Length: 250
Image (cartoon, rainbow, N blue to C red; front, side, top):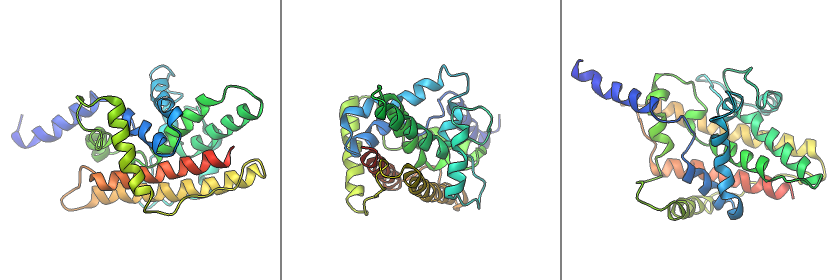
């Protein structure tokens, strides 16, 4: 094998041997913790666990492969809701999955049923929303560097999970304090209005993630790994949106 091909081949090998998750488990849990939902942190890993046994029905809920130049709108987000848990959309339907899962949470909660599981799925999807490479085309760049970017703030395996989650959550909270809080209208007053405003926020963050993903790919030389500051800034957006959505659904 030619020497100049080794780095790319190694990257592809590592990608194939690593699950294509958006952020790793401790990062997802930290988003929930930073949103103030400490008791629900472990629920945030359930969506990736479900992918292992769902026969592909869960996969499309975790990403949306947008071509360069695509601008996500609230209407696009709402149009994806019908594809929740469906294998019918090869490009993914992450944005609609957020609304669908939160709708399930609200319906179960209002009917006095156990509602934590759909909340955990929604929290995971909202975390996925801020991962740039879950919002861009699944091309060679994405395939080669996806796994490394998933774990960019995770650190080593020798750090205990609780300590890792607390460390990442603390950094997310610092970024949250520097930005205006998200506010959504109370769902109990007008659920249609809540969904519309939520869709606008999802579109806003999706477009920010798309822009960062393609900026990494188009930079000269290519920026193959997010900086920790970029990653924490993205994660703060997810945590802020989760916090606002949960508050509006109470």
